Length: 257
Image 1: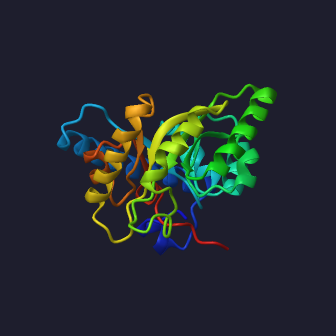
Image 2: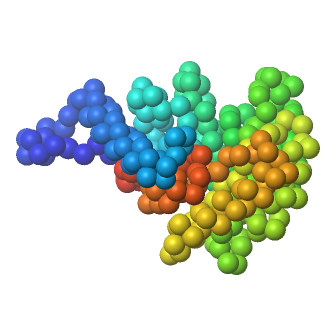
């Protein structure tokens, strides 16, 4: 929902559609620039010259916001739910954006996800890999789509998998080998969410160790997708190559109704 300025609120007149759209675009541009500034400062503080890629997480926000972000130069967007992602990607098929599926994936959704996703960042079970392989190969036969980038989601909780999904670190190599041998899939790296209430630096340091162990056998799987609005600095410090930022760019979840 667009925030009204002081004058708008006092006048009692709602802004026109074009004015509201322009105001929203201006708001998104401001927020996007602020996040890019944070990323730049954190990259410099970490002594890095390789700036992480930004994936803007647009879940719960309308397709119109993705279109606005595209005009601002955003090329990578993330979604958590297949139904929402499939609808938006179809509506915005004319845009030059890459869709990243970052939510928990049910095997039965693989066929749908294969139609639009550039990457799936939440691979944590052998059954999901089998389903994605079949779906992507089928889609390649029909449309010639590129191989699907796959990130293994790693649980950084002490009781792996109990809270935010993900495979136990000890399971990463078997999942990696499965992906690496699957037609239509490309092993891209690892993904994780810092555990609730935990020190994100300690969590992302553990993820960096898992990533190094993965690269020992799969050198090309160098991606580390880590860091959200509240902990991007910690993720960058420990080598994140991709950041998933939502609320600091889009704002609060829109009101329904």
